[in-house]
Image (cartoon, rainbow, N blue to C red; front, side, top):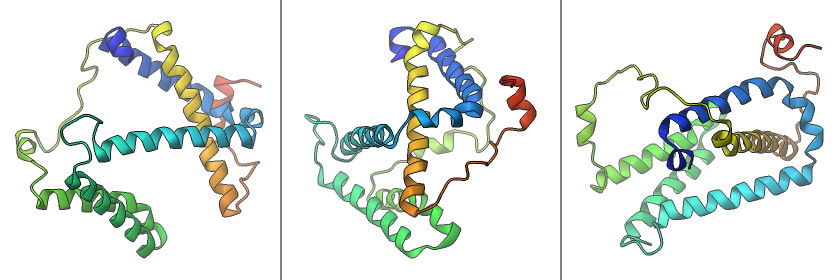
Amino acid sequence: MIAQQTDLQTASGAVILAALLYFLIVPIFKRFLRYFPSLVIGVMLILVAINLAQISGKLIAGAPGSPDFGSPVNLLMAFITIASTLLFSRLLRGTSRQLTILLGLLVGAFSSALMGLMSIDQVSLTPLLAAPTPFPFGSPKFNLIAATPLLIFTLISMVEATGQTVALNEVLGKKPNKNSSLTFPRPYVEMVWPR
């Protein structure tokens, strides 16, 4: 949206500003959790889930009105991917269970390749290893007005991710350690936010 209304350099600058906001807020974010009661976090999680369901539905069924909308092949691929993910989730134990989504995606990709739905012709044209190009769209432009929607989304994303963690802890019956220190070294926290 930022790139459509301005340009790619301003969008790049907005992403850098959002990263700086994360970097500055994470050390003190734990102090603000008391302002987000369970009801607020629950509503945010429901809204995010509804939005993700809509996006997933369009990825699976296609865009309404498009020629491949509701294509049986797309629905079959989605079913294979979801079913294999659930199967891996039930069969795997311990740390290997954390790979269930990746393995489900690999089964879905392999199935689509077997059905002739995936083309990897362009892969051979690119190098096996390559360093990223810094600032591929040019020097970033920092426009605070243009970046404001992304900065607001950044804060909402932090609350949502924290809410998911709190909700999972409650479901699993685990109590978060209130005295746990942040992952940032103490000198960094004091440098950014002195007492």
